[in-house]
Length: 334
Image (cartoon, rainbow, N blue to C red; front, side):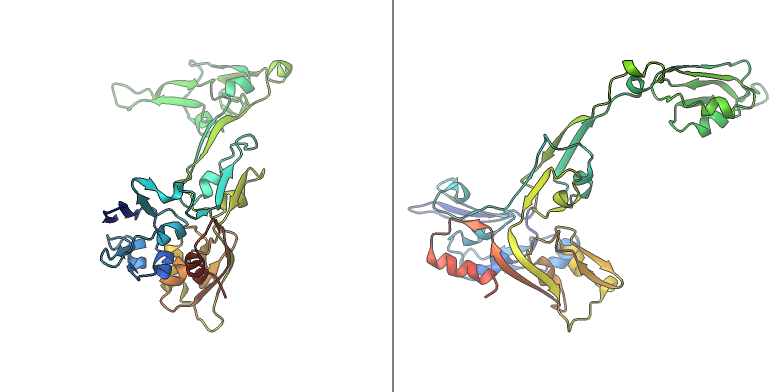
């Protein structure tokens, strides 16, 4: 964590939170005093170097807050007299956003599984098997020869055989075979495969189906906005359109035509991408624009400078200073 403080008529402090930083270099690109330097982001991202993505020269930093306002990841924070500039009406604010409608969500877990930042937490409550299927089971322990076929064949893992350590003083193979009716789906497979007809199964589900309630899946879906990078994975994989994402930038990203990607022998771009938007396909990097947020970390990391991004627009509003407007325009294509 980097920390710069100035005391005076206004007490200002600039904090860099490396755990949120992705090494995109936006802050260093627009710093009016070149006080911010981008470090070796590839070894840092790979965990080979334990240091911050950026360094801030406290002697050069004027604590203007431009870097904090332009960082789409909230990795930089400027406080003035103890108040974060993000909470001040005179400072810019990002309008990029991500949300999941809990009323629409069916708790399938696709978004939670796909999220590259583990920013989505799912808790779901499923009905118990006994609420959906009913029946009766019985194992004749006298007939049972403890062959274990029923245990191996059970599709619900509802059968357990207590095996013994066989020795000359205890030649019995097992003590018993038990069927857990809380797991049993009364399919009768065990009954049909038993070589000595030691198992009896009666399924009453069909007979009582009018009395059995329809299964309901309940749960909670939580999106950690502090960790989310607004990549759009949740929106893309959601089968019911419960997730909605507005990215920080709009534009395009592509590999240069005169660039020969080294693919698996390099994969620097894939290693630094915070969105899991880059994969190696047929020996070269492939960028999926559906998941890219145009942060530029991959372009900074590519040792051959083979990645070009063109930002057309940034979802940052309330920029009141002409100087800041001009400086922020440097992030966009002319």
